[in-house]
Image (cartoon, rainbow over all chains, first blue to last red; front, side, top):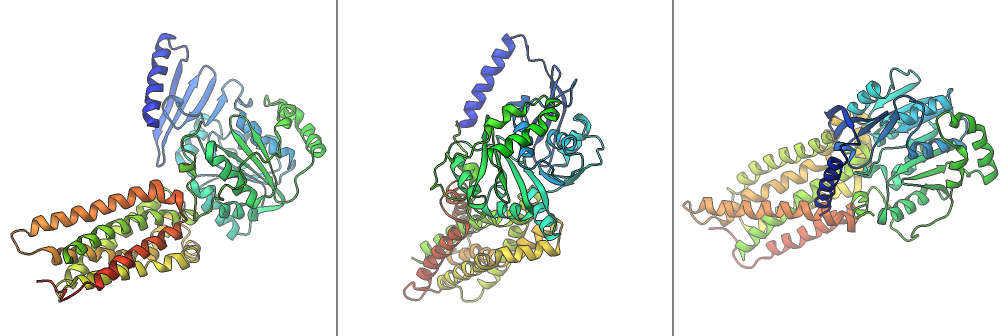
Length: 299
Length: 199
């Protein structure tokens, strides 16, 4: 049902595009079929995007302004980076999900002394990020090709810990269900240093929103809930800062964020602690994790 | 009665195997992820175990076959799933500790968890063929009917588990329900009245 609607939408979009004399002017730079999906790189004008669906039909993963690679053109990386307002000087960072590498690159600028480990499951994405999104050979970024959860367990066994963990492994199409369970979040919390912070970029809508919320709340009693097109959850292994501390921390980054084209002031009002979900929603566990089924029929 | 039970057991066993296989993916995901190679490892183990089960079931059918024994195999197959419920997480953690490569880790993990129950499930079909075939001339038709029932059961088990059951229940509760149904059908076969030996 859903796919036939998508096909119809695509047809309509195609007709409109043809009429609009392809004002879009989308250029395909690279495409390859990886172990997991199709990895495509498109350029429209000066904006270059990595997509996992043809013509970036559903969701762009990462986009970069080719003339100003430092500018951050999408909303969600800005929201993810605002986790620095909660943990201003991370010494060690773990990022799950590389995409085009926007977040690790910006983080390296914002916290130059931090050691940054990035876990990416798909070797093709790593290759594309290096070639088209000048991840280059940034030696400060340690890229590990592995499943996020497998790597978290491995890091726990090696008794490592991180000041900041960023979870950016979901997209509109598919949620790796073993990365959205109570047990996984407990493992992540155990991997956080005292006072460490988790920032998660999620795509829940409809029913899944409630389940995701109660699952996070079962491990992190309080968290910041930032909502725009995406939802970013920022939780801590310890108490959350109050509004004054948050504002003071954001001011430290005002100038640095400006250089990325981000306004720290505009991000601050997004920090909400309101629990706007159904409290009785069943918690997702390794035993019960139908995240994608719950996310069907989204608005 | 014997005929109906033989078909029922074959169909249910098909359902059971595929439901356990899909839930196996669920059980392995937290430790090894859910990449294509994890699924490859699971399917390999199931296919290998089934192939050996076919051999064993065919061999066993040479020796005084009865629908009671068929029911007994179904019960044993269900009971050997019990360790999954009790020890899956510590077992898989131990395997992941010993074998860091998730490909071979998941292969060994899937073998430890699923090989034995699937061998018993594989014994069902050839054994049931022996019970339902009355003579040589119709053996192909009867075998075809049995494959139909068994594979149709597999299709139903795959669809119901992946579309609906995981949305309703926890993995272990689904496994318990599957075992209970196997127990009921197996018991019915064991209690079948009169001389149950095949012709």
